[in-house]
Length: 167
Image (cartoon, rainbow, N blue to C red; front, side, top):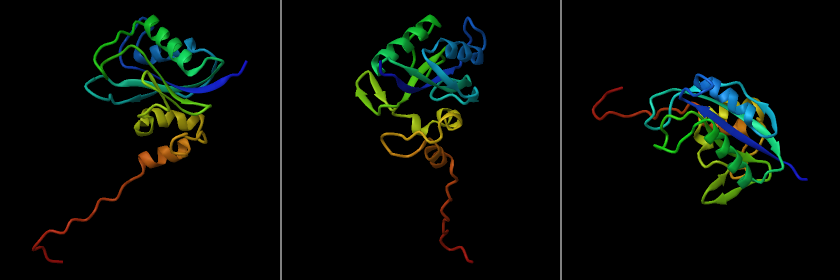
């Protein structure tokens, strides 16, 4: 039986039956199939219209499940935690996303791996740098460490010349 390794992002910004968002994240981690390792939980600003801060982390799992079957398993965990479909980027008790897959890419309407937005999400890259800094993005060929450096590097501000201003 062939096993695949996946990176799964875990986030919450709403209390649930397990407690505060960080408690929901910890409980969801324990429910993941084939857990190998997990990064520390961090807090992050919300994306979109939500006003509540998130508790986030990433986990590495190893499982014989295909990407589609792992997605079904993650959606089942979300339902067990009380997740209901609602406003995009709204408050949620738990959010589980497949970010990366050791076998490369998936491009289906219901599932895209690598996750299309992960390269721009510090709340995914910061914990992932702790777990798998050398994992390569199959789309860009860059390592997680390189993606994080690109996201967080300081950009110089171009100097503006004001007409009529002297030296």
